[in-house]
Amino acid sequence: MKMQLTPEQQAILDGSRGEVVAKVMKSLVMFGETFGAEKLVPITGDFGHMVISFGIGVMKPVYDLMDQLIEAGALPQQQFTVDPKPLDPNIPTNLLQDVVFKVIMYSQQKRYDEQLKKLGLMKSDAYTCTCYMDEVGNKPKMGDVLSWSESSAVVYANSVLGARCNRNSGIFDLFGAIVGYVPYFGLLTDEGRKATWIVDVQTTKKPEAQILGSAIGMKVMEEVPYVRGLDKFLGTELNNDVCDYLKDFGAATASNGAVGLYHIDKLTPEAVEQGESLIAENAQIYVIDDAELERIVAGYPCVWKDPDARPKLCFMGCPHMSLNQLKDWTHRIQSGLQKAGNQKVVIPTVFTTSPAVKAEFEKTTEAIVLKNSGVILSDICPLMYMNNPLCGKMPVITSSNKLRTYTTAKFYSDDEILAQITKGGNC
Image 1 (cartoon, helix red, strand yellow):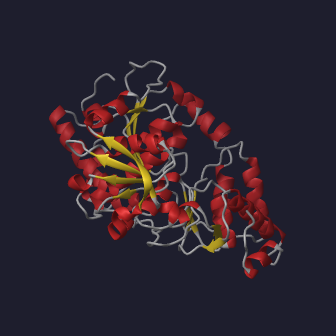
Image 2: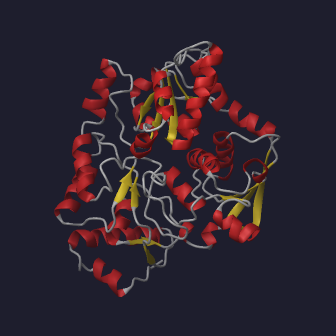
Image 3: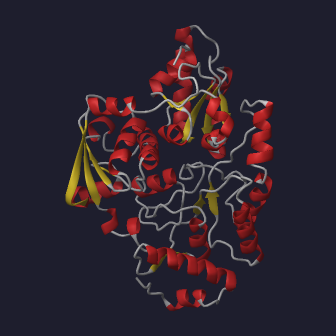
């Protein structure tokens, strides 16, 4: 399908902003036409968000591309946030891991950080996958058109905030920000935001966000679900606890499937406004009860070299934890340690959060309690930390279904994680 461009858009394609920007525009047009887009629409969100934040050595073409863009002055029309960095010297590593991380895998990190600054990084600490947190400052409004990547951020923006964004790949998020337009298709359109699945939650208690999201993601894949029955557990207000739940739920739908948008009956903004009129004709139905969630968890493989190994590391915060979650987990750990008769966590444990949230948390009384418990607070990406051949031999535990899906980490529920890190016990 041939895209219809406005005179201004055609001028950019013809070189009005230079040869490099013309190539960027051509790439976006080809991308949009591949998905049947008839036009480009303006980006209206205040900030962009990029997924690529790690200076991995094999990405030389990306760094060369960035240099070309910077040299040509082909910069984004808006500042942006970017996913977390892959390294933190405070997280336990051995000498071999240090060599793999710094010399082999992320040898270009400093170079890439400098490139991001020149391209328009919002601020020096704007590295997080939860850019929409109030403390970070990249929170789009309902109806805003975005050029974002990072699956967990896109699904949150679409679903909880009511913004509009397709699941873009890295680089196309940047290209859209450079020209100020994105192709109009998919989740940007009213039709594309219709639910093609009805999910009826019929559990006897509030389902774990990460498990419920996993079940839905694996069933509906890239389609849009309309979830009914959660209001009896979550209520009908988007408060801090509910937003945290939906953050983790959405990340699981996006990683265990490819969901870019979900609607929660009586809760998410479009579902509140439009109700079940959001459901497309002939939508399929998926019923989730206690037995279905048990079946889902039982199907998670353990890919450790030794399935019975004692955990050597626990990661929490994929996506990054909120201020509310950090406080809540601090109290849970404090209580768990007291009951177990321990002073510190018995498994090295890392909580990850954004630099901005970390700075706010460190002003609270809970910060000292968490530090005294032995938990490490970091702003890295645990997925990138584990994305190396050495971690295949390391028994890592997590309650993040995203981390479980993309790495060798083993999944446990929040309650099981709490028991593991405060009391210990074999897997």
